[in-house]
Image (cartoon, rainbow, N blue to C red):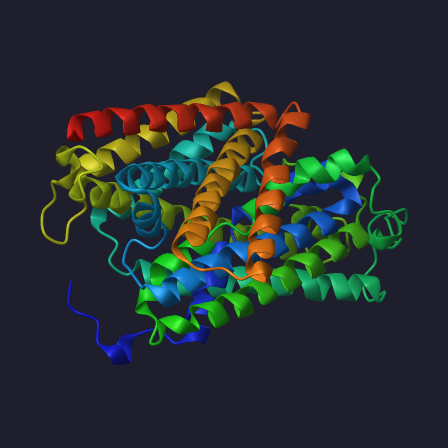
Amino acid sequence: MRKQTRSENLLWWQLSLIGVGCIIGTGYFLGSSIAIQKAGNAVLIAYALAGVGTWFVFQALAKLTAHQPVKGSFRTYAKHAFGEWAGFSNGWVYWSCEMLIMGSQLTALSIFAQYWFPKTPLWIFAAVFAILGLSIILMGVHKVEQMENVFGVMKVAAIVMFLIVAIAAITGLINPIESSKNTGSPLSDLFPNSGIGLWTALLYAFYAFGGIEIMGLMAEHLDNPKDAQKSGNIMLLVLSSLYLLSFYFVLKLNSSTGITPDESPFLTVLIAYKLPVFVPHVFNSILIIAGFSTMVASLYAVTTMLLTLAEEGDAPKLFTQKKEDKVPLPAFGLTTFVVAISIIIALLLPGKIFEYLTTAAGLMLLYNWIFILLSYRKLMELSVRTQIGVWIAFLLIFFAVTGTLFDKVSRPGFFVSIGFIILIALATVIKLKRNR
């Protein structure tokens, strides 16, 4: 890979745009339906709290980046703060998280496709999208960043399309198919399902902000690494505003009881209004294209991440085997194996697979964020005000994690994530003993 010159480095606003494009994904377009179903109108509070917690976590990552820009970002900081075991376990927690996220995205794409073919089993769509995604990776994707920029614009375009339609509906320019549609203010009843609903929804709200760690990995390419904090602040402000505004419109135009995890909440609203017949289909097409690009990026990331782990001695040397500018086949083989497992799970558990995978992926993501906060406390001198912010983030993450125990659908995902942590802990112990 040729060396990047200073003129090719990213400006702060470019990283903000990349961050928005990477973070907005199926966790927002479909995962939000789970949060709305569980919390009702209180979902607005859930996303506001998740935005605050995410902001504190990103502040920690951005300040670490400004203090010491390194290639491995949060994984390297964990190693510096706590030793080799932390770098090893952090890397594998993140790899596992990305694999679960990839499975969640694959399932979401299949659910979007079922809008057109409702009788086709979920696992068939999952297999088709998986084969297409793996084929692209196998051919060698060397322009993933440019592709993500294009599809990132499409994601924002989908949100803007929805907001325009929502404003038109609220102002009476278009009418609902049924006159009984909800027209009350979502702010008038924020706790229809009690505080437990808000508690269980918090994880899915955090999940929609997943991706800030990618900005940490890319921050080394900033023209000025100290701009990472400003870049993240703008990105989170834009994201939080889009999320809260769009969910307000969803709840304004359709009762929360009409939202199900089997369909994007935005699509549910669109098909309930008298729009040109092509509008919902165009919107669903954008969701599939945008979601597919994110899934391909995840496949590429987990494959190359495994290569990096192997090169640093944190994975079997087998996974370092690759030809120049080619996909590392052993690492690609493991990725393909895990994808196959996701398809089998879709075959066996078609009804709740998206919720199971999303819950487990969201939890693994938060475990990584906990390490970011711990590394920040260890490596930096913090003021009392900053310490308070860190503890607020810890508390919000704690509520998000424990909230899954109060919901019978989310609970299996919690135990799946604990299973991953136990396996990674055992692998860490074995590695440490071998290195002695």
